[in-house]
Length: 510
Image: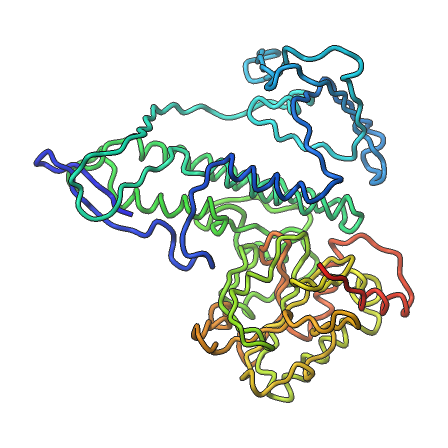
């Protein structure tokens, strides 16, 4: 991407070049500009795969009541919403200011009054996604707080006739894609947590982390957007002595920060029940954030950041190329961290060609599947295997392994069964164990170096369903792993030993 500035000769000149995406930030080599309606179409196509989920359009809420006496009961449907079908394809909102200038109440016209078009819904949760003039917020008397900044924008849809040398012309949206991209991240942050709570798997207390994690991101975004808009609306510097113009250095720095917002890689969540980091390790918000909010409920488990020095707690789990242990095919490791609501327990097994290190791995697996540990005795039925071919019918975490030994010196059956699940009908799941080594065609990914993990000792990392790093520990620290999940999961019925073994071995094709 090129930056162009007017010169003293009345012509514009290329002032600098930069990559249009941050090199190495993702396994995808470049950014893609895709219109919002096309992104929505992708979501709708995916939703259609689930017949139980239906999207109703042209429906507006008319009232909402909450039974406060029932809100602490997980199984109760404490919320009652009455809805009506709108006649027009798009209801026309009229905004009235009541009870002060900052309180907004939304009313709809052209709403069908026929009783047959009315509906009453009782729900456990209601998610308000209705924007700045939120009807949902108005029902609770919440005020829309903030300030307005006005800038005038012009967008030209033209085919330019120009003698610009070099690179193609790029048109940038004034909003820089922040609204939709960050909002999708907001929705997913809440979505996976709410799904685990509604299913009775996770404790409802994890829902509090939505505000503590995403509020500071929103605050950072608002501050950044004001500065970014100012940069776009101001004239460039004429020279270094120009005090009022915008320097291209500042503009390039802001452009990089914008990419961190839209990608999510700039977010750094503070310590809470889902992220086991101490308060000195950083806070929510962007990497250069000077403040943030920490949850009042913090994880009881203690992490050891030094075991994976480049894989930061509270930040997105990075991706590096690894090699499938069985077929030697090269993959970006993030390819196997599917966004399906499961946690990921990633076992960095180290150099398992050494008997002592392989012994540590077997001890880890043994303690995960036997004894009195919480994960094995109560939550083992929730451990799942997930690949193109296999998946347990119920689960909370996926186990994946990356080792650093020469691939030819270690056989699949050298690993404990927990790490190489087998089904009598489907056989082995061969997409569970990977090696940080040389591939035949694509070189060496240097994953251990990229993650900052000692290739001789390894470690264990828990990655949340939204792919943020949650916990880091030694292979021997199964107790710490249990403690982390104990603070998240609801207390399930304790099955007997035969029930546990039966559920762990149960797989189905996907």
